[in-house]
Image (cartoon, rainbow, N blue to C red):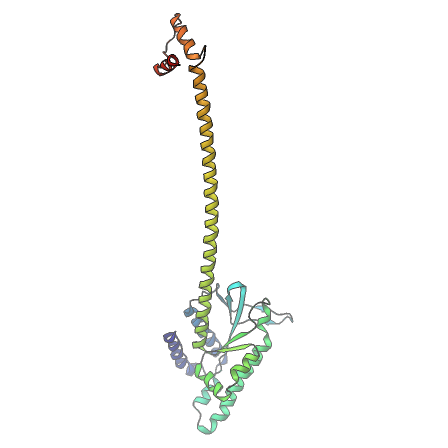
Length: 269
């Protein structure tokens, strides 16, 4: 996480000069940094998070949050990216006399975005059990530090508006936590599926044993029927085998002989 955060900081520093003064390009770059952090977090696009989904609130106003994080149990968290480089760049390159005024302008820009984001009420587009806050992503950590130095209560004031301020470092830690939540959720679901499959296998095995027992009973019944039939062939007055032997003795012509075992049994009986 430290190495990835440092890489993000270096990329940020290298791009500041190229981006300053172009608000549209700044916004696109901020969203790109946000998406790269999401990719490094282990979360999967269009599964654990989605980008640039469009919604319409109760007033008919169209809303398009930068990122929507999907949490277990169908909960959602909105992430909005904020890039404000104009006043910050001027602040970095200003002399001592200009820094105080530019610091206030930089802070005002961030505070204005917090207010506007709060008024969008992104959290209201989801179910009531979703987290009632929005994450505001500031991709330039020194810019956030400069605003925080000017207003130490900035984080708490944003929190009062249901806005959580994050930078690349803190966002990556948050996303890794969410990734762990998803891993635990998948393990829990797997455990439930294993238990269900084990129960189904147990029931199937019990049914198999019951069928085998029925087969055994039927085999016993068949064996008894076989023994009863054999007794009728060999025992009692006028049994079939003895009668056939008498017919042979009387001169009845036949092409086949009775098996010796059957003759012996009839004679023994």
